[in-house]
Length: 317
Image 1: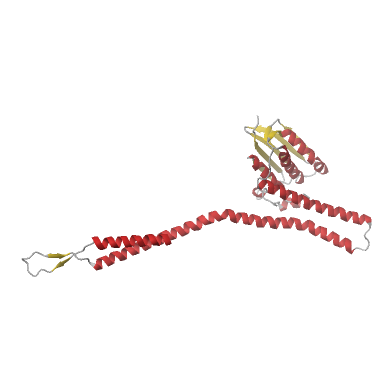
Image 2 (image 1 turned 180 degrees about the vertical axis):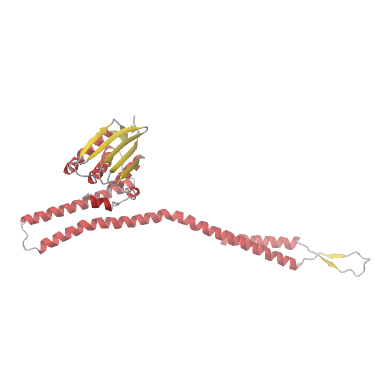
């Protein structure tokens, strides 16, 4: 507004000054003697000049209003675009704190309740005390697991993970991940079927193993008892493709776009299974894949199962 007003003022002064010097309207002086040629008075016509000054001022005012309005509208939208990522970050932070507090409140409440009941009991024998301590230990393990998840997620999101890039055989990584999930699968009598082709990628075997453990753990949680999980590896042009297919409860189409959000879990899926978790595993897996410049494709149908396809760039032939 200041720049536009100052510029308009300078334009107005220059134009009116120029008009005052150059605009010389004349009026005809009555000639009483027709034998004498008419005389012309070239003195400044103040009325015409005043009208021109008014028109110039009005036009400059209209131009200023257009400029200010346009700048205001553009500034509003540009500021909105600039602040949108900040607003999203603040909202994500608020949701994160709220979700983390909710997840921590559950085990803490259970711990507090069990301890209070034990302290009020007058017949606390050794067997009961051990059961209470065992239950408390389970709740402490849940909080420790949540803390570890949060630390891992923070490291990957902030790029604090230093990957030791080396030649990694994906079929070996898959076998190790299956071994670490075998006990959980045996509890639900789930079998693993594998079709592992020889694929070598450049990466860190530790976080690739963590990546596969997350997906296998997720597949086991949402599979039915006596089910199966199919894992395949193969090379797809310049990508190494890992596919994990289960035949469990599946994911509703409305939830597919949110499954990689922190703390997101489908309420309907949780009611159909006894799966427990914090909704952080897939978020961590997604961040790991991003570190490699890869992607994750998901196909799922409700009550039919899910297929997770992990694509990692092949850096070694």
